Length: 119
Image: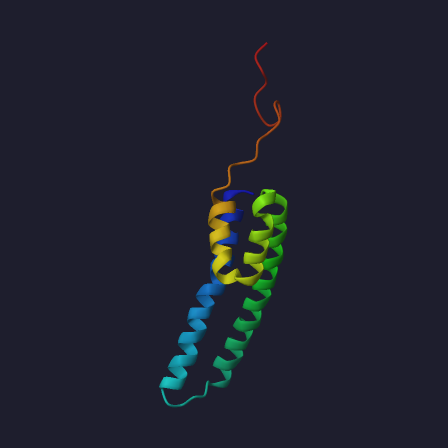
């Protein structure tokens, strides 16, 4: 996975915890203002953001579980899968940092994509 793809995945991974904070701030500020009601436009925007975030979280969960199943060593595989499924908003960024961002680049077979060996 290239660096731009890793960064895009990282941004998507950070969105759910950030959205939780934004959502709570909007709801608490609405309640604290005494009105307790959102305008129609704000309610629709919040609904769209909420559904989009849920779809992103489902997609990330599928991606991370498949990635962990294929790339994590046997003794940690089941643990990572369970943690990613049960604590995705917290475990996702940790997994991304440890297993995707800092992952070593894949090794290439000799003679593939490199210069020819000297004669």
